[in-house]
Amino acid sequence: MNIPMVDLKEQYHRLKNEIDSGLLQALEATQFILGPNLLAF
Image 1 (cartoon, one colour):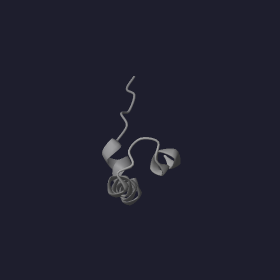
Image 2 (tube, rainbow, N blue to C red):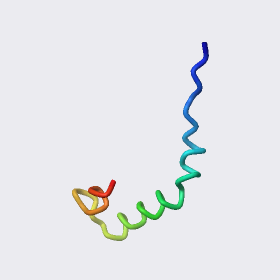
Image 3 (cartoon, rainbow, N blue to C red):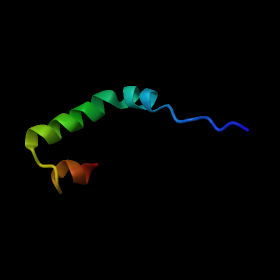
């Protein structure tokens, strides 16, 4: 019995714009600990 693996690349590419935007916002704000982006995540 084979259990299919999760395709993380496909999932990332589907959500790429949203993920990249969130990362950029966190980097620009330099609020990495308990900032608004963490709460939204």
